[in-house]
Image (tube, rainbow, N blue to C red):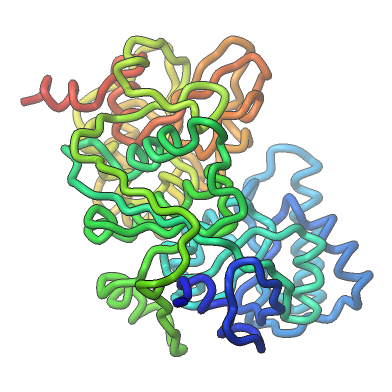
Length: 421
């Protein structure tokens, strides 16, 4: 029997041979990190296991949840982290959301083993890496030893076929998969690698691939995987100096499940409160009034997402009495969006361009009051995620959020396209 790409990567990083799903292997880690919300737990555990960093080129601190602290507690946390980083001679990276920063810094690359305490770590699977979330205590051990014991996950294969019309985005495709396959449980791929393929995926941009890989977390996945192609290799030429290895799944590999998803006639999708899997066609949401709109997060803060939204908002104004927050995922994306005039489009439309990073997604700004509603490109919409327990968060694509911000209510972005013809 052949091996999946995940099995091959974990085998190559270990001393084992013939690795299959269900095995437990000790692997060498290539990239590991701690961000500010997990710092206290990590520091205590790290000091207990010895407090010595095995490789300062592979461990780093990342600030991406509240880089601009709004409370004294947050400010003190950042000050302690920076002081500790100076003491340990570890780099502090503050350039945006880690999942996009890895790409910018060339850390996410084919075959890399990446572990740390952030649930959306599987986003790096868009670059052919094995990237999975572990707790801050496990991360402390990794920093000390450079190794971690992992159970080799089974692999769920999802082939996506077809083409979509304008303003039906990779986020809509991901929502469709969540709704269709997660009908009985949000975590239909719990503990697995979600491996994406098919003609639709073959034609995706790197931004689109990251969006799909990011959504694997809401499927319960331990990791995700998209086979690297020439487009990715060309991108990495200027980002990665070291050699890397591309691992691909064998034709006879044991995929525990295989699904083929036809998205030819797909419409924009909306996830209703209080689950990303509570997905319905946009037609079921049209007309629902919103108080706030949010464009950003590690799912949809890419340059491509900002371009789509700006295309819809060009020359328009957001609805009176509503707020719109736009948060580019990294400083690099913000700068490029500024050069292209995209940020000015948002400002002229009446949106507030945020400092980026995680922003409103986990509730660090744009807090909702009781009874208020937000349509967001955030990763999640659990009860109380963005404010009051009795507020409501609806999830949509950048196109749906932008079109809806103009009307003040959930709107099919294709209707805006028709209106401007």
